[in-house]
Amino acid sequence: MRRLSVIDGIFLRTHQGMGTPIALQGLWRTADVVDPAQLRRLHEALCAGPLGRRVVRPRVPGARARWQSNIRAHPLGLGAVVLHPGEILSWADALGTDLDPRRGPGWRLSAAPLTDGGTIIALTCSHVLADARGLIIAVEQALWVSTRGDSHPAPGTTPSPADDPSTPADPHGDPESDWADAGETWATVLSGTTRAFRNWVRWPDLPAGADNSRPAEADRTRSADGRIAGPAGLAETGTPDSGDVEPAGMREAGSAGRGPVSRDPADPSGSSVELPVSGVVLRCPTVDWERIAASRGGTANSLFIWLVANILWAAGFPERRIVASLPVDTRDEPRIDNDLAMTEIVVDPTDGPADIRGKSRAAYERRMSSPGGLPEEFLYLVPDRVAYLLSRGAGERDILCSNIGVIPPALHALGPHDCTGVATRAIHPGLTYAGRPRTRISGYLCRFRDDYLLTLMSLDPARVSDSTGLHRLAERTAGRVGLPIGPW
Image 1 (cartoon, one colour):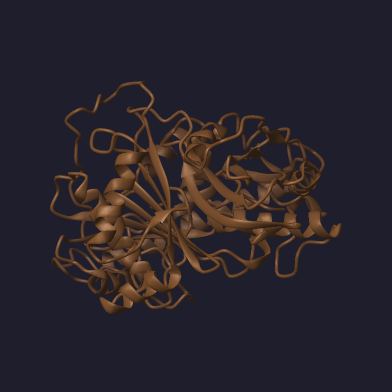
Image 2 (cartoon, rainbow, N blue to C red):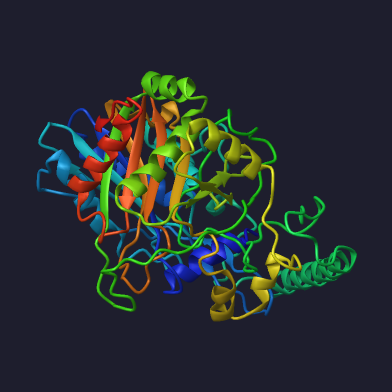
């Protein structure tokens, strides 16, 4: 029986109003008008695929919520209004409403014609159901089914929970398995707490600067401020550049210090007014991006982090140092679950791509560890509100830099329709000033064919008033290193 992870639970609480609302979104542009019948086949395949699931709460204290198959879906959205390419993000911003991972449906497929003769296709999904890499896997599987008429999942992908014979028909689940799961949780928390106490006795009051990391078997992913670490308020999962760190065995890590939280002078704190979010999608040839990164001793990933940090400074961010949150894909097999960890680095104004590369490599080799190292499974044993207070904001930093990685060839076309660009991002439906996270700019990078596609989202309307201003800041910052970027 598939159960929700601690990170899944964090995103579920954001859906319930405890934290920043988050939905993932993949945007595909095609060179021509996509046949509606092709879109309907894709929609049907997604319904029967791994996104076709919902959360079922357990009836036994300490048991984890579980996944149950759910083929109920929002109807395929076929827009009649022809969009100018500059209107794509505004159109897509409105697609994150009415996504319900508990009752379903938790995702939506939409499409609209473009003035250039192409089509924009948007898949929007609650972050409870999947992370960014998981969403790509789900689409890859659905495209396989819709274009080949083959009900079996694509090679290298994990079958949908709907195909799992262990998924019970009873919407309340199997009480016996809930009791067993609860027993495992309590045992894990008890043993982890005991181990944490022993570690505390063994290493009391370490001097400043000493390594306070725990043995490899110690509990995972803890925040340096004492709260359970997780991607609350964040969005995508990323894949670090191989030049920064080896992919195998990456775990959540932390750098020294969180840095101060900046306050906007025009920030109506506590206001229920909806926060205006600006976004832009930019394109850069892969050969230019990697050449400029290498010329400065960096990698594609460290140049990406440098760019996002310096865009925030160019917008007038007042702090000398910027703390960057870096999601990392930790899956060891292709599955859609939220299989990610978080790390952070502190970026100084004098840092170049080479310096950021070194900081990132060091950060990926360490873990965050809360005082006492309490096991993260403790969140299963407390009410949602308490779990939220323990984990809120733990993954939020000044900027988010999510490197999604390479878009697989299976997503380069939708049947006979060639794709000309792919953008990945997170949106925050219904986000208010009162619920705004610490994050001021989020960046999402993916490689599509011979280009890097960079999506920037500003949650800082006091300094970045609109998408035009964000585009101008990005071009000006990229120009400092000769990076040729333009609209996608």
